[in-house]
Amino acid sequence: MWFLQKRNASTLNKYKERTDELKKAQLDDKIEKLEKMKLSGASDDRFNQLKVEYHKQTDDIFSDILKQIRAAEYKNTEFKVFGSANDLKKLNTEMNDFEGKIGEVSQGFDELLASNELNATHSEELQHQYQTLRKQVLTQSFSYGPATDKLEDELSEIANLLDKEKQLTQKGDHIEASQCLDDVKIKLGLITDQLKIIEPLFHDLNEVFPGQIDEIKFVYQKLDQQHFKFADDIVQLISDVQHEVDESNTKLGELNFDAVNTNNEDIKQRIDDLYETLTLEIDGKRDVLKEQKPVLDYLNHAVFQHNHLDKRIQKLQESYILTDKTLDMFQNNFDTLNEIRREYDADVQSIADKQVIFSQVRLDFKEIVKKLDDIEASEKTINDDLNQMLSSEQIARNSVDEYAKRLEIQKKMMEQLRLNGLPDDYLDYFYMVYDEINKLYDELDADRINMEDISKQVIVTQEDLENLVEKTKKLKYNVQLAEKLLQYANRYANKNPEFSDQLIRARSMFDDDYNYNDAVEVISKALEEVESGSVDRIKETINS
Image (cartoon, rainbow, N blue to C red; front, side, top):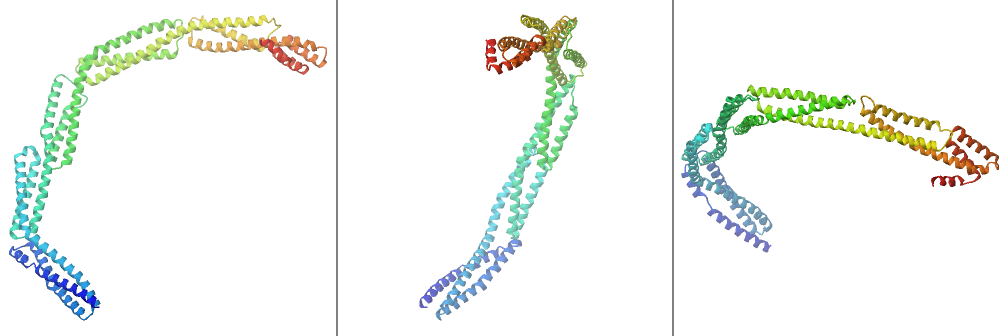
C-alpha cells in the first residue's frame, strides 16, 4: 500500500506540473490581437466559435481537471490508493483531450492572425498574373479572333473577384477573401489553358484554311477557263468548306473547343479532297493526251490481228468443223472490239468538244487497254488451238495408219494358226475395231473434218485395239496350249473310257465349236485326274 501510494504521489506531481504548463499556455494575447483586427463575416464567425471553445476548455474543463487532481490526491493520502489510481487514469485521458482541444483552438487563432498577411501576398501575386494575362489578351487579340470577347468577359469576372477580395479584406472577412483568391487562381489557370488551345485552332481558321481555299479557287478558275470538267460541283464544295470555316469561327467565339476541333479536322479533309480532285483532272489530262495515240494504235493493231485471224478461220472452216467454244470466243472478241471502238470514239469526241472529265477518260483508256490485253490473250489461245487442231489431224492420220497395221498383224497371227475357225466374240470384237478404223479414215477424208470428234474417237479406237491385242494374245496361247494338251492326252485315249469321253469332247470343242478356252479347261481337268502336274509342265513349254 505504501508503494502504491508513493507511485500515485509521483504521478500527481507530474500532473500538477502539466497543469502549471497549461496555465502558461493561455491564448489571451492571441484573442486580444484578433479582436483588434475587427474581423467580420465568416472570419468573425470562426473567431467567435474558437473563442467559445477556448473559454469552455479553460473555464469548465480545466477547472474540473484541477478539482479531480485534488480529489485524487486526497484519496491517496487516505490510503485509498486503488481509487486514486483509477482517477489518475481518467485524468490522463481528460488532460490529453484538453491539450488537443487547446492546440486546435490555438492553430485556428494562428490561421486567422496569418490570413490577412497571406491574403495580401496571394492577392498581389494573382493581381500580377491577372495584369499579365490581360495584357496578353489585349495586345495579341489577333491570335485569338472571335474568342477574344469571351476571354475579356472571363477577365472581367476575375477583376470583379479581385475587387471583392479587397472589400472583404477591408471589412475583416479574411476567410471569404481567401475563397475569392482561390476562385481567381482557378479562373486564371483556365484562361491560360484556353489560350494554348485557341491559338492553334484560330491559326488554322484565320491563316491556313483561307490561304488554301483562295489557292483552290484560283486553280479552279484557271482550269475552268481551260474548259476542264469535273464530276463534282467544285463551286458548291468550296462554298461548303467556307461555310464550315465560318461555323468554326462562331463555335470558337463560344469557346466550344470540341466542336471547333471536330470542324477543323473535317475542313482539312475537305480541302485535301478538293486538292486531290483538281490534281486528278490535271494529271488526267496529261495522261489522256499522252495515251490517246498509243491506245488508238493498240486498238488498230488488235483489229488488224482479229481480221487476220478471221481470214484464217474462214479458210479453215472450208475444210474443218471448228468447235462452238472457239467460234463463240472469236465472236465475243469481235463484239468487244466494236464496243471498244465506240467507247474510244466517244471519249475522243468529248475531248474535241471540250466536254470531257479527263479522270474518267483516263479510267476508260485503262479499261480499254485491259480489254485489248484480254482479247490478245484470247485470240492467241484460239490461234494456238487452231495450230493444235492441224497438228492433231496429222497425228490422227499417223495413228490410224498405225492402228490399221497393228490390226493386220493380229489378223496374220490368227491366220498363222491355221484354225478351222475363230470364236464369235473374238470375230465380233475384231470387226468392231476394223469398222472403227475405217470410220476414222472416212472422217479424215471428209470434205469438212471435225477434229474434236476425231480426236475423241482416236482415243477410243486405241483402247479398243489394245484390248484386241490382248484378246489375240490370249486366244493364241489357248490354241497352242489346247493343241499340246490334246496331243499329250492321246497316250491315255485307250486306257480309260471316261478319259476317252472327255478327250473326244475337248476335240469337238476345238475342231467344231472353235471354243479353245473351254477345250483347255476340259482336257486340263481330265489330264490332272490321270496324271497330276502334267498340265503345268506343258504350260511351261509354251511360256518358254
